Image (cartoon, rainbow, N blue to C red; front, side, top):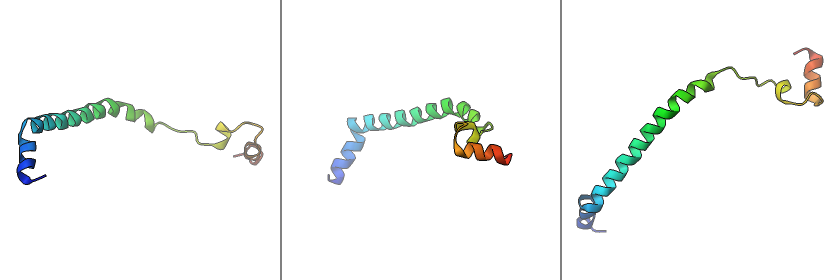
Length: 70
């Protein structure tokens, strides 16, 4: 594409729609961030990553944890 063609593309009718589409994408990301920000605070709560909390009681690892008193 020649520079004249590129300038015509950016400054013409298609260029206007391109700019509008880019602003819509930016606005969509901003809305997504505003909606997701309050949900992020729920992720900071305490987590129980102990193997005994998610393994079955009959698992060997859970039995060893119970025997060791951890």
